[in-house]
Structure formats: structure tokens, C-alpha cells
Image (cartoon, rainbow, N blue to C red; front, side, top):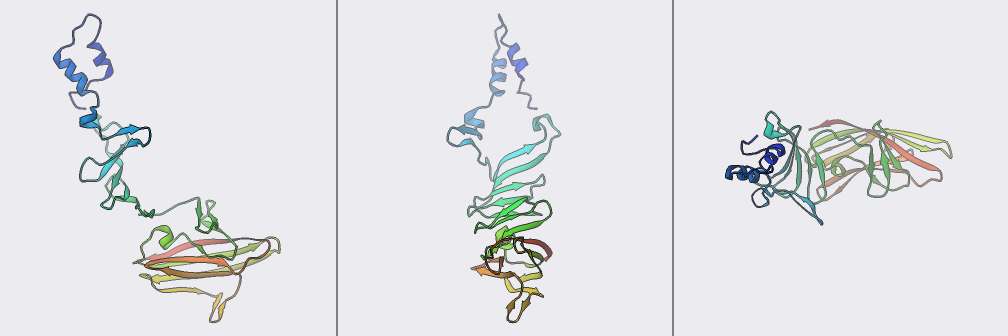
Length: 243
């Protein structure tokens, strides 16, 4: 800890009844208190709450430690920083970015994403109750699967996925299964291979496709039609490779 700083007990001892604090003791009191003008990198307002902004060119606005770093021996665990395009970054103890959120609301995770649920843009609820299985509404509409652009992944890679799909209608006791492999090479050569896919179209009650909009690609799934009593499509996705 900086030798100028004193704890509360020490500072209070300077101001006992009958004592006359010295110039040095007043200096210690001033140095032990945060100075808004010099140290005011963190302030709070009624509208913004706590305000954070980088103090230097590193872009780091906040750092999390396990213990008081001024006591020595405590290394940074996490850092909150801004990148060159004002995106928000979460960095680990080695300064490597773990998560990035850009101004277009895209979230990029540098690692394995684990989630308890997903919500598609078409109100098709998808959930993974601890087993890695997604639940998608069987409403005949296309729903984005949580890979590629929907997961903030760039299209300039080569990826292959295995999909294990089950369609369920409890009312009619209808059950339909589908296995498929979907792949692409840098956004091109998009393929979906399945024993349910034929030259004339798909058999069964599930459809899978690639959809490209601009430079972004999405892997989508839907039920063949809207069927009375249709409950859901259950889907498990495995990444076979990513190059």
C-alpha cells in the first residue's frame, strides 16, 4: 500500500480532544481520501449511475481483483475495456478477450457458449434444459439456429454441424426423426445432407436450409406445415469441425 495512505483508526487518532494535527497529518488525511479532480475516473449520477471510462490508451475502464491490489500479491482476474470501435470487451487475467459486444448488438464469445435457453427472432422459443437439446416451435415458420450469424460467428471460416432432430405431435401421437449434416466453406458451398433430403425435396415433417443475406449466413429449421396439436421440434447441434 502507498505509504501516504492511512486507515481510519490512524486518521481519527490525529483529531483527539486537545490534539493539534500537524501539517503532515493533514496531508495524510487529504491523500487518504479520493480526490474527484485528480482521481475521479469513477463517478455516480442519478441518471447514469456509476460512470466508467478509460484513463489511458489501453481502453481498460475497470479491473476486478480477488483482493486489494494495494496490499500486494493480488493479480487482475477480469478487465472491462473498450475496443477501437467502442465495442465492449471482457478480458481475462492474461488480457485476452473472452466476450465482445459491438454497437450493432452483436455478441462474440471467444470460447464455448453454454446457455439455458434461446429466443429466436420469430418468437420461436428454443430451450436447452441442461441436455443441449433445443426446443423450437413447430409453427411452419423458419427459425434461426444458434450458430453462425445468430451466434455472432464470422462467415469467413469452414464449419460443419451434425443435427439430430425430432418432430413431436402428442395429439396425433406422431413422431418423426431426422439426421442431417450442414456445412459451408467461408460462406460458400453451403450444403445440407440428409437421408430425408431427395432430389425432389424433403420427406418427413422437418426442413433444414442455409440462408444467406449479404455477407451473413444462417442455418434455419422449420416444420413442414402447421399441424393441429403439433408441439415442437427438438434439435441437438454438434460442431464437427471449425477451420
